Amino acid sequence: MSVYLTGLLWVGGAAVIAAILAYLIRKYGEMEGRPANNEAAGQVFTIVGGLHAVLVAFVLIALFDAVTQAGDAAYREADGLVAATWASDALSKETGDEVRKLSREYATTVINDEWPAMALGTDFESTGWSQLDQLRQVVAQAPATDEWQVGRKTEAANQLWEVYEARQSRLDAAGGGVSSVVWFVLVAGSVLAICLPLLFGGPLMRTHVLIVATLAATITLLLYATYQLQNPFGGGAEVSPDAFEAAVARFG
Image (cartoon, rainbow, N blue to C red; front, side, top):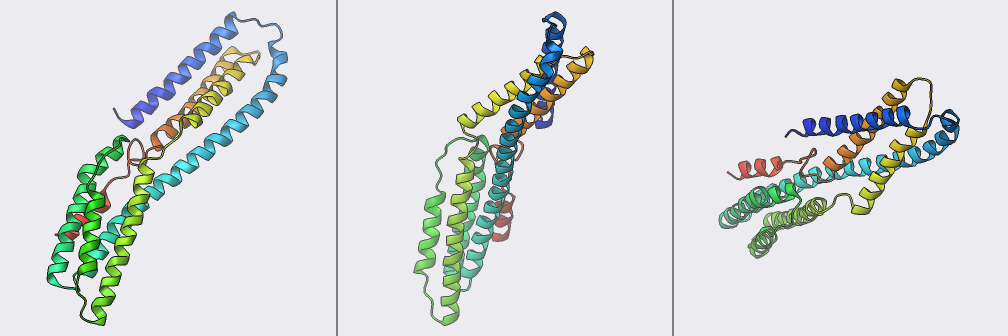
């Protein structure tokens, strides 16, 4: 099911449930003193709603940054792999061919083995680290007969170090997400923020029902966005392995 259709169902369902609750409470609940609750309940709602809004905004901004950093790390990793291959071509034909072969195998491992597991948010075992070690060994053992080749060898080693760092950043992003404690606070704060307006009173029932339904829909939308963004490689964010697919194409 499409992420947009799923989100629409969640938001619409929350709005309908909140509207039904508001209608039942206004119709069958005790009306005496309800208008007088507006001032007291409104002050509490301002505090609860304000704190909840700050928390949700902080979480969403952090998740947006994590998605951006995950995409940047993937491109730095793939670009570093290509740059290391190009630098190795200047050492010798045998070294260049071996580095190109290992780089293609590494990129293929990332695309076919690692990326599906990262998208699902599951643990996985991969030969990626060992393939990078083989690349490092090939470059380290390559002969360099002149100053130009020494410079290219150093450049290839530096680029492989960039690949190591970018790979670790990518794996860290895949293992991140929102902790259970934060989810508890988000859900509990959302329930409190939606339930407090049920205490309000007013002359028009339909206006009260509409306000509660709109509030519930808005909060649910934010929670759904948080859920979709907590894994940069899956859900609504879904950072793709385009950088590695382009690298494989460059390797030939």
